[in-house]
Length: 385
Image 1 (cartoon, rainbow, N blue to C red):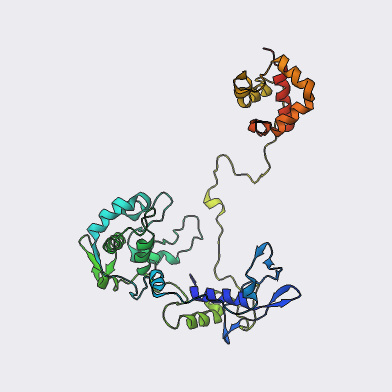
Image 2: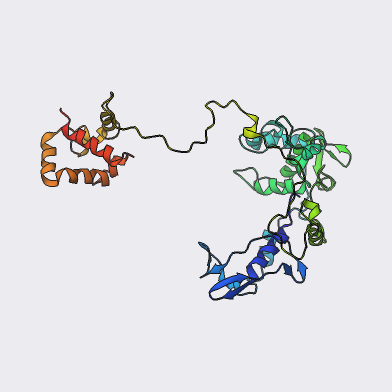
């Protein structure tokens, strides 16, 4: 099981929102997994709502009272602006054409910096090809149950069930920093090039360096993994197919339970032996791995050389206190410090420094403890010029 129809998920969300009843200021969800007398795909957890919030999060109380608020009817221009989907059956796919050769030029100019030479990936961005798509599709059932086992290879050619998603995403989202700047012909050219580096065929014809892709040919693309996803979510019977699929827990390794009753625990059973590979099979970490999470112990101030107090003054305080150019009292200026001591006392001087005064930030912007900071202040007062 790889994915679930978006409309089904939306339906579940709406049911969760509207199937709530108000009781003494607290909204308790109704216990049902039916909508319009049809079973829903259940398994969510409902949380009580009180005073317009569930936990710390505020919710839309109007929804809890029932009913749907759909707003106004969109205009034709608004619908046209939103309706940009490119569907697997060709809906929304514009006319155009582009060659592999043109696509390679565009790719080298606008795509290679992220997706690597020949779509090999790099820099944290996904690979677009790892070789022959038909051969790599056979790896999707590989299990990584041994340290040296080859896992499944999931790239466009081997994994995606339809090519329309690629066309649509390139047009709307690429290049990454300048999306929607490609012409339709440039998109066709890039798709042709990506088919080429995945060593694919279209309607029995190899996509070679001279291949030209147009709308008619595009609609004949059949991806190697077109039947690799379940349940089937395409077509007018999609929702019915999804319901039937989940009606039988054996389809996804579940324990056979009463379908009309909710199952919130022990609903799955182990269907394959899973071997956990510790640390990715690596044992010679240097330094060794440690589960200790405590912070290093703070070193106590000592008389060792170099003097840590003097170092703290030098690194954090001297820039303002080494002379009077910054308007701050100069370290070792006995007359100035005696005057301040007479007016504020030592605790007042400490307080000003710890809390900040005038343009001086608290503790001079350092992360010293109060004890450390006071020691540095004492050092500045008693420093001999």
